[in-house]
Amino acid sequence: MNGQNGDGAIRMSRRGLLRMGAAGLVGGSLLARAQTGFGQASAQPGPNTEAAYVPRPRTPQYRFRVGATTLNPDGRRATPGITINGQYPGPEIRVREGSMLRIEVENTLPDEPTSIHWHGLLLPAGMDGVPDVSGFPIAPRQVFVYEYPLLQSGTYWYHSHWQLQEQIGMAGPFVIEARDEPLRVDHDIVVMLGDWLYRSPYAALTALKKGPAKPMAAGAKMADMKPDLADIEYDALLLNGRGTRDPWTYQARPGERIRLRIINAAASTYFRLRLDGHPLAITHADGLAVEAVTVDYLQMGMAETYDAVVTLSGSGSYTLHAVAVDGSGQAIGVLHTPDAAAKPNLAMPTFEGRALSYGDLRAVAPTALPPGPARPFTLALQGDMAKYVWTINGQVYPKTDPLLIRQGDRVQIELRNETLMWHPMHLHGHFFRVLQGAGERAPFKHTVNVAPRETVRIEFTADNPGRWIFHCHNLYHLEAGMARVFEYEA
Ligand code: C2O
Ligand code: CU
Image 1 (cartoon, protein in one colour):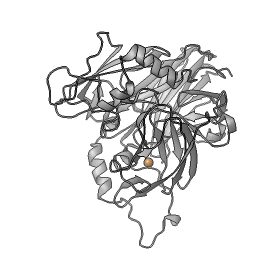
Image 2: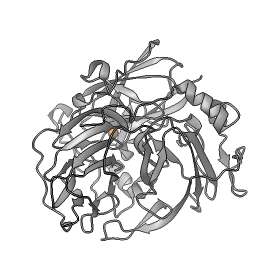
Image 3: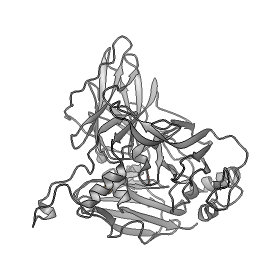
Image 4: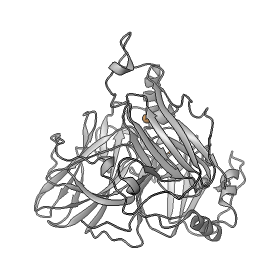
């Protein structure tokens, strides 16, 4: 298997980012912009009175119009949603490593703010799109221009970071092609997974807060309880925005190599994936290259991405299954050869053979952090199912104390999951090392799953000053408080 080197490496240092930013982005400090909320450009006079940053007159590569739409992704029920350019998934961003990216986002919603977060990207804090952490939300009828250098390559995604908009259609794939791509394939395609509700997610969250569906028996202790696999009962699971009735299909010839860029863009669903009759060669995790490892299936938390290379074994139709871990359903896609019709296999697959585990992930080069003062944190992931409040060290976001660190710190985090649910913990603006078995080749990720009652250790270097949210990527856990903010200055 190819793909041992290069793609996905972070090739530019923080200093490079600053240099590039100073030269190519704005004539000033990115940090200053982040802190003053510059970057807000008004299309017309509106309710927001923030100082306007007027961007240089250059055409954006992408124009996103955020608006209300009716969506019917699985063909069974039309449901109100909010989308980008009327599409779900949102438009695929495909750009080159090392270039500048400029995306104009217009909020056409009459009465609701929005904000887009570029998930997994190393960018200046002011471009990170988290309201009240790194900037302002984009007010109704306002335009914001995101502009930042692309310092990395790989498979990422973007989504709204405003309330529950991500659940109702505001998410899309973001692919950065490597400057030197060692991986040779015949096809390079995105597989984006999602979950879908026919009812309002706001109503679903309110229902969760009203009390547990399964009441805890009097006197029951946590220790006697089984892990909970899901918060929400979904009406449909989606692959590239489609349900099982009319699934996404893709055609390739026997023997051709297909790079599947798999993104778990679900709001609250863990998936297990397998492709009928084919092993999956995992080449990248969260956008970055790993030593290729071949598995029969993999489990993905929300917000993780994996690239898997498959070689079509022969003529036929092969179904890619993405099954919710609670067994409630699956999303499918179908790969087929030109001489064979796409024939969806709707049978639930069994998951046997080798599964991918974090212990299998080895970076393609040593990832040891540069020396720096150790800044240890123990963060307990906690939940109160009765009230449906999710916390980190007992604090409910946004009423949390900042986690103060300093530029150059080596931030070491022990994540202790004291709950019975999985939590895919995601850090903005940095990659962290997942310290689980690979020694000096510990992989860099932006999202790490923490299993019920498990403890996971991660570490990162504070090399991108600003305020950065660290949160559970279960959208309902985030909304119910499971987030903290790391904060430091240059
Ligand atoms: Cu996908 Cu706060 O992130
Ligand atoms: Cu969580």
